[in-house]
Each structure stands twice: as C-alpha cells, then as structure tokens.
Amino acid sequence: MAKREFKVLRPHLGDKMYDKGDTRVAEEAQVRHLIKAGVLSEAITEEAKAKEAADKAAADAKANSVPDTKAPLLATLTGEAPKADADAKTGKAESGAAK
Image 1 (cartoon, one colour):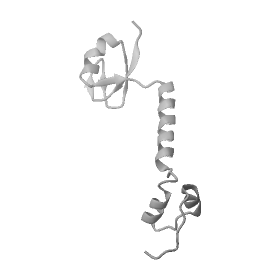
Image 2 (cartoon, rainbow, N blue to C red):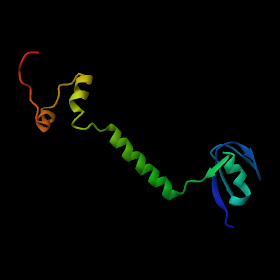
Image 3 (cartoon, rainbow, N blue to C red):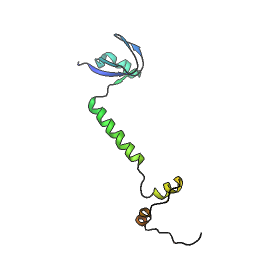
Image 4 (cartoon, helix red, strand yellow):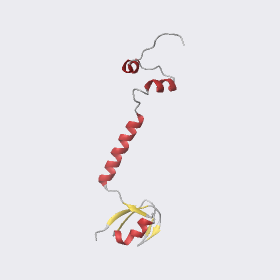
C-alpha cells in the first residue's frame, strides 16, 4: 500500500509525538483506528484546498450581496434612503398619499 498524508486532529503518540495540526504520513491500514476515533482525518490535497477557497469566496460574495427585493428593507433598517432603481424594478412608486 502507498503511504498517504493525514491531518492530526488531536495530539497523540505514534511513531513520534504528533500535535494538533501536524501532518502524519502513514499507510491507511495502520492508522484506520485513529481515523475512526477522530484523532486523524484525511489530509486535504492542494486541489481540494483551491476548491475550498473558491467556494468560500463565492459564499462570502453571496452573503455580502443584497438582492433587489431586500434593498428597500435594508435601507429602512440602516436609515439610508431607498434607491429609486429598486422601486422602478418592482413597479411600485410612492403614491404621495398621507398614511
């Protein structure tokens, strides 16, 4: 079997002392019990790291954007004047009638 990299989740004594965050290189058969116990996890490859970073960036961009339907509500909550574009897109305009 080929040796693989595993991420150390909890400190333990193996062929040497491993601390949290270290990388341990071993055959999966030799450390399977540590994976099941939550001591080790499969190491993240460079490709997986790049995908994870891209997914996080996309999620952050989506979380920071405000849809047009929520823009008037956000403006009300933050005290900013609502955008005229949002009213034009929804087809609603102020009637000017007193409430």
